[in-house]
Amino acid sequence: MSPDDLPDDVKAAGAASPRRQLYGRSKGKALRPAQSQRLAEILPRVQIDLERLASGPAVLFPAAPKRCVLEIGFGGGEHLAAMAKSEPESAFLGVEPFLNGVAKLLAEVEANGLGNLRLLRGDGREVLARLPDASLDAVYLLYPDPWPKRRQRKRRIVDPAFVAELARVIRPGGEFRFASDIDDYVGWTLARVLPNPAFEWLARAADDWRQPWAGWHRTRYEAKAIREGRVPSYLRFLKRGA
Image (cartoon, rainbow, N blue to C red; front, side, top):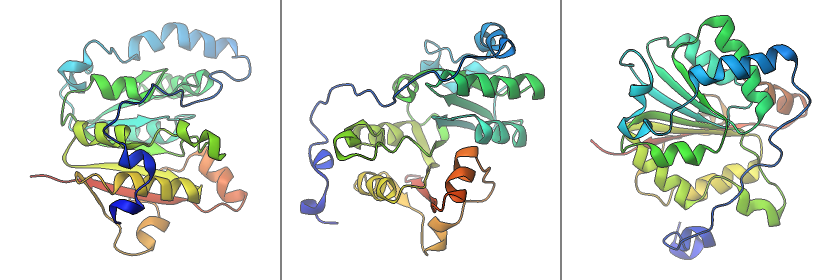
């Protein structure tokens, strides 16, 4: 990709840009009493303490974790809960602005005793900004809001500043993983990650982005997309370095 082929926001990556609202509504249908109770009683115990993040995500957990992983926009929490269950020795952070999604994940936390999970209802960029350099082993961004209309695309979370923050917080040898069923957003993401020299796209053949990576946990959103005939893509980017 030559410099002339780069998107305008990549060419202007060094310029300051205003803080963007990345999501629409933050609450859906009325919560059930049990969900409200979990939000009142369980969320304060597992909420990400932004003030402590500067010392690294491991300080949020009682025992030193094997790995530290962040999922931005976890939706209903199916993928994040599955990872936490399958890797009890690792630490997982999840950020989601939609209240009902947070409430759903808290039910999993309660039912399965997921002590290796910490959550925040909010903007994933808040967590990235507080994290120290090279403090995460992986970041997942799965089925983000595609903002499909041209005038809306400036609200997509993936932009050069976001990619630069990922490059800062992911350790060398770690990964950024992205999935979407919107072809335009897949291309958009490649056009904004590949110009950053910190990342290497790990695809060597078409099946490398057509098939999920090992250990993939399907979300409800993905199941719906496949039922409706949309084909997901799965991107893996390696953080370069020793």
